[in-house]
Structures are given as C-alpha cells and as structure tokens.
Amino acid sequence: WTVWTVGQALDSLSDLGERSYQKSSQLVIRAIPPEIKSKFQSIKNDHAWVSDFLALPHQRITGGTGSGKSKLLGLVISQWLESNPSGQLFVADPNYGKPDDDGYLNNWFGLDSKWIKQPDDEIDALIDHVHSKLDERIKACVDGAKNGFKKLSDIQVDLTPICLICEEFDSIVERYKSDKTSSRFDKLIEIIKQGRGYKIKLIPVGQSASVGEGGFSLATLENIAQLIICYPSVPESQLRYLGGAKDELIEIAERLIKEGKRPAICTIKGQSRVVTIPDLSGFNVIFANNNPTDPDDIWWQETNTETFRLALELRAVKYSQGLIQSPLKQICGELGIEPRSTNKRYTQYLKPVWESALSEAKTLAKN
Image 1 (cartoon, one colour):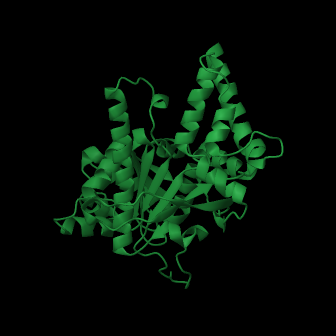
Image 2: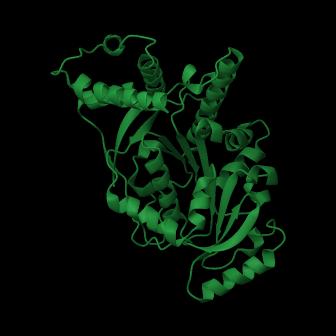
Image 3: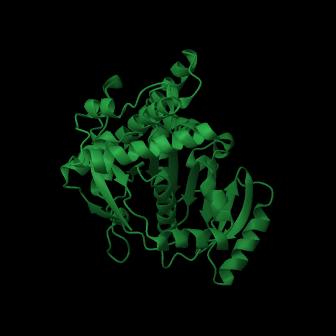
C-alpha cells in the first residue's frame, strides 16, 4: 500500500504568543489494492466487534509492551485512511525513535518524520493546532446558522478529515494536569466531545486503561471506544473502573490466554465484553513516502481543498437546476487555466471533477 505525501502549509497559531505550528502533510491514497480491502472485510467478518469499535468517533487503545498495540493501531490508521483518502494525519509521540528490545527504532510504519511530533513544545503546538481547527469549524457553522443558512454546502468551511494520534497518552495527560496554567487537557476533552460532527478524530494510545490515570471522566468515555489488550497477562489494576462484571471479564480473559489466544476487553458506550484480537500477522502496514515532483500534481493537491470541492458542488447543483449558466469557464479563469484539450490541469484534474459533481447533482435532482 503506497501513500504519497505532499507538504501543506497550515495556519500559524498566534494567540497568546503560542509557538507557531508551521507545516504538516496531507496523505493522499492514489490506489487501494484489492487485497487490502479484502483483508479489512475478512477481519470485520471474523471479528464482529471490530466494526462496532471502528464506528465510534474515537478509539482508545491500551496495553503493555508486546501486547500488540502497534499492530492494531496500524489497522485503525489504515481503515481511517481508506475512508478518508485526503485526510490529515497527525501523530504526537514522546517516545518517537525509541529502540525496542531487538534494537529497532520506533519509526511509525515508515511515515515521514515531519508528521510525528516528539518534543514537548511540538506536541503542545500540534494539540493547539487541531483544537484551533475545531474552533474554526464550530464558529463557521454557528455563524452560518445565525445568518439563516440551512445547509453545510451554503457556507464556507473546511471540513478536511483530521486524525490526531496521541501515543504515550498517559504521560502527555500527566504533564498537562500537573501544569495548572495549561488548558491543553481541556482542549483534548473538547476534541473528544465535539470532534465527531466536525470530522476530527482523536486516538489516545498508552499503557494505562483506568479512568483516573487516563484522565477521562465517565461521561467523556461515552464518546470513545476503548480496547484494553489483556496480553500477555490481565492488567487487573487498570480495570478497577469497569464496574459490574469486572471479575467475570477477568476470568474469561485469563481462560483465553491459557488457550493461547490474545484477548482484550472492549468497551463501547459503557458496555464491556471480552473479545479476541484479529490475526494481524499478515497485515504489515508500511507507508512508503514519495514526494510528488510533477508541478501539475502539486498544483492540484493544493487547489483541491474541501472548501473548493464544496463550492464546486454548489455550482453544479445550481447549474443542474437551470439557475446559472455553465460556470466552467469562470472556474477556469479563477484558477488561471485555459479550458483546452492540451491543458493537463484542465483535462486531467478539473474537468473530471466537475463532470462528476454535475452527474451527482443531476442524480439528486431526479430523486
């Protein structure tokens, strides 16, 4: 599975003199091989809980060293990228680069290092940036409603899907809670509670599964699908907040470990059950990074934003309803390109997207 990257300038953070968050990257999946989709489907078919787990807006994965967190996280990331091929992926990991027992460095599936933030100040700036994006989206939608707009397509708002992964979440939270002047823990809670409607996902990953150590209230956990991996042993000290059937869950998990299986406790909307981790031995996710050198590719990736697509769809709807003349020449003028068969930016990029938007608009009009 090959993923191409393209640098994308992001808005700087200037409020309260915070460190400017300069750049990130956007992931664009050019092609998803059939075997990857087949693997996803077989995992969902064989392990029914996986679909429920992935369906919640946020996923929390916890487990000790060697429990299989990284492998499972690779599945979650791959699933998200499949559903959001032009989404933005951000990683905060205090232990990025840390060697394991075999001497291999933690390199995040081969992802470009500029996507992973490791020093405290970079992690802080990353969380500030994602939270600022949430604020911008909320404000745009609130202002749109106040101004009488009825549909999302009527307002200018960038809803590019964002996935923020926080490795060693326990240590990040501990640092924030010990600093009484920091509001970043509250920002993480807001991302969890409000992110779903604005296409922002948080995936906390760490060693601890308890509410107290993880920093979440029970109300906050309602928005998160939790997976506590019970391998190679059951982490009883971390399960004290599960309530009711804790002893029964531990008993089932211990029996599965004796049978040579890899159990986990899955909690979705307050309901916990013991599940078994899918066999991911053949699911080796490696993200190859190839920076595009074609200037036309770079131009299109910078042009084809969420805001641009929404505006294009709105024009297609109006044109299909006879409210305006064909806006294609006007769009070309706005983009500085000529609508000619010899112009690659027109024939290979803009024209196919416009025709697709127009076809969908006509289909909606018929229905």
